Length: 95
Image (cartoon, rainbow, N blue to C red; front, side, top):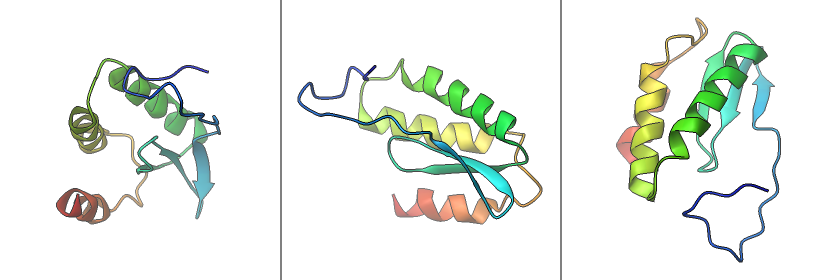
């Protein structure tokens, strides 16, 4: 299984499907257990999940990763009409 260069060798990780449907909308989870969404379709959620993974592969420390996830979530334009930015703002404020 692929790992980030920041992962420790001894850690065994199980890959699961990070895209899921809840309340009629689609989301994806990051390794940091941050839910990103909602998206109107599974295809859109998978696309944005892949885009974020490609961005995170280039980063080396946890702070950079969290900043990239925050920026990615705020820059995404394909959220469904149910997107509530205040929920994500709560995460950013409390982190």
